[in-house]
Image (cartoon, rainbow, N blue to C red; front, side, top):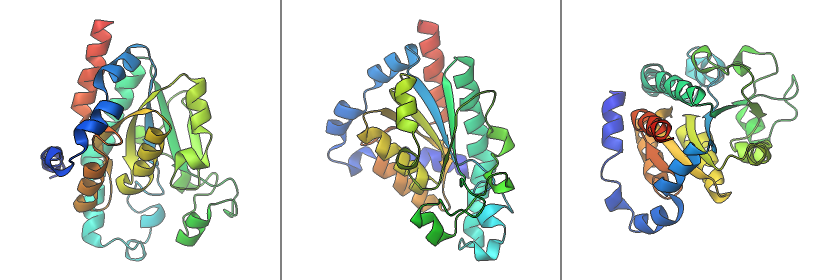
Length: 247
């Protein structure tokens, strides 16, 4: 089901946005992105793939009836995660690692055991992953490897709540491929903020998820060719390999 959704979501967007071409020429420039790949100025940003929000029976889904997400939406979300998103994220991570490109991980984790440092929004939502807790751990399939950079945050926006911008500038990174959850929340915020800060952004449609197919499609429709390129995992890996072959 998820794979069929991916195909349908990547069609008919052009007719929905009358300013698409103007934004695409100004912000979404494929030749520039390929140059950034060739010069290793690109990183893969993996957002919130942790037990808090990306594993059955844990975190916000520990009590499925109290999660606020209907059972059918939970089933859709976890089926998409397990069958499509997590395998694709791992494939992308492996492709980036093989090319010596940075893989950066963000997660929701408080600085304190009681979460008093959390953002007001996370306090209102009762969203908390304490240091050392299972909820703060990454899902093993897509966990950091070696000394890959890990950033902890307590707000939707990783650029607002961490020093990611500073780190990327130090690494001479000017383009980001973005994956993770939820598409319409933390992922979307990262995409928009990155674009506003001048980064070239690629959003991976089949390596992101949220709790309904309608919200997934709406997010992709809004972002595509305005704030980011939208690609599939297969397309991205082919691009990375072509850059390597041309080097």
